[in-house]
Image (tube, rainbow, N blue to C red; front, side):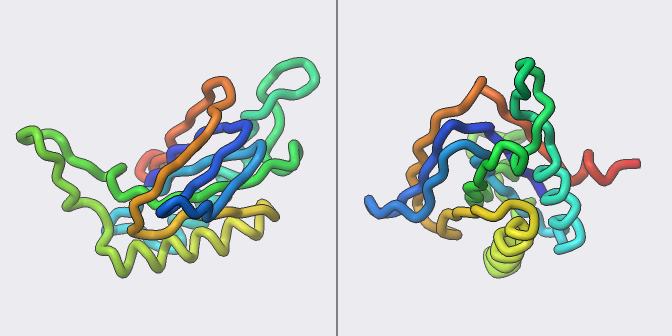
Length: 151
């Protein structure tokens, strides 16, 4: 599982000109799900994301988590995070989770994230989406479950 976490001042996602989710300060998160991912892995990824201290405190140090600053989440499914570009010029997505499994896990992630952050907005699984955001910093972190679970 991969989470690309962008600290934002605001972000929104739309499909066919209709806004599905919109947040102010918080994280816009692209979520890639592989064929080997599980709810247990999702739980670890969500907990780590929610506890990341990447917002500035009064001294300008990245010391505060998303809840401390009253931030929101915008969670977007993004299978292209599992693009394999090693051979040729057309990416392969063989490592991305099958759509039914990935959609189920994406829905699980959205609900589980609400246990940590009260305001969770979302995109639409499998849809062609337009994302508008203002990255704050810019500050972007990639969480990869392979790295997180490595001992």
